Image 1 (cartoon, rainbow, N blue to C red):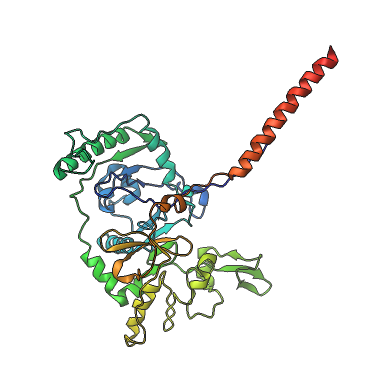
Image 2 (cartoon, one colour):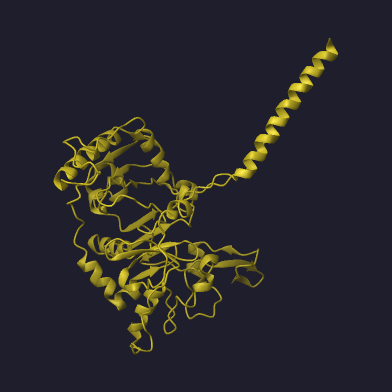
Length: 411
């Protein structure tokens, strides 16, 4: 018998705790098989695992990641490639992700940085998710005490001693790190460390300054719906081979195939488009209606948000009153932490934005329905399951009656 079901995993992790949270952050190194250039199967699911990483600088000092992070001569490799979940605080369009990528690009003197994410609901196919299963299994039956050094809560479960709460969190986090550090996944070690909440990331003021530098940003950074690039590749285009050579095709041409990178570079292919430059998302159906609004009408550069497009237009010395930087008006608001707003659009695509860039007038807040709408995990249709059970029961009864009838005939 065959049972149809959908594999779907929510991208957004809405943390309900108001203050301190124990949040595991996992970096999974991916080992590429030797001499596997150009072969997708050469990209494995195996490699070392690190949790927690506040920044990439820590990985350069861990021996388990040395072969992944450094060349034989001991220098940091010139190209970084990341894949991440599509959550609003991790996706490539999030401003803090862009600033962090610029910071790494400058700090390590890299040639390129690529940060990619899966389409919504496809987080189950992220390679790092393969590491979460064995990590979660190790926590079966483990109880992390919240009051190892004494309770920091009153009778209403409100924090009364902030320092004691931090010590209790450290104790729980240290136990968790010890458990995971004993684990070996597919022959590769797991390195775990508890990070104190007082430990901050490296200074990012230089990265913020570069992001504000419109000329540098336009020359070095490309942000699309699912990919951030510093040192960018040409946009993917559909091609087909004809008697006169390779030509680009439209999205609805069933003969079209995406051109391999080296072929596209050698032929200098570009998609047919009425825009001055081909947006990286030209063949992405979910953003097809946004391509023109997200592209600069003067130089043709494509951006992943209206805000970034409007900011870029100021580079062309257009008067402020002619090209205003309009505020974004979301369909719903999912969360309102300090100075940021988690906005949901018509497709429930979530994105963090500065509160000064959002028009919240008469926009409803998502409260209790967030978990059931955005983070739903459909596996199988309930009605189909009920129908399947009834059929199975009827089949079982029929089989039983047939056997009884067969015995009576033999008798």
